[in-house]
Length: 280
Image (cartoon, rainbow, N blue to C red; front, side, top):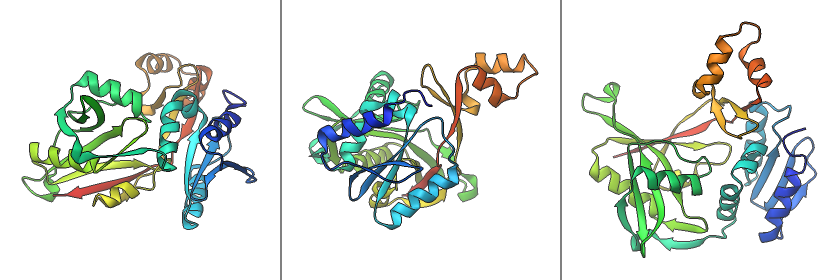
């Protein structure tokens, strides 16, 4: 049993409120809801018996049938419910469109960036060097954040690369041309030869990046992570809280996985990322 035995029913009923086409599919051992003929959601409890390879194969099988299947984990639904629903509405074409050319670009400070991504991005805020926003009628409607530049000596003495770290728009809005506008602005401010980014395979097929001219360069391996069942915060191994790692190192009885389980953590995984590059 997971954190909430009724969470899958909750997802179904909540989606049904704004999308009456939704159906629960007979797809044992998977719990899959069909939101329409092209968008399905696989509901995964934190207590499960799946492997990364199995979930990747499931997603690819649906993709060959023209269906976008996302993997929604129980902890993500419980901790980021509004952001999940925002993505669903976007996939279903329920957002209002706003043309990015009507908005002006402004530099966004760290506090604004943190608040915006924690409110509107499925994975929340992560620190980045540069952030730019689109503003319309005094309202911040989209933000993109970028890393500092990194020299890539293998590609040339003066070759510089940066990462698109996050992009999000306000709930209910699709900013047509918005990300492209922000990327162009960044590339004019900071000299780079390429811009790299990742698309989360649990959620994305990368089509948005394909349309922007990005090139798929790599499929990264699935990653192991741990979720704190009290706070619902996810951690990769190298980012576990220092107090937990200190306590683990102070004992010599349990291995890390067992120690974390004893201390309220559950081991999960993702299905990796699609790595993209845009060249200038």
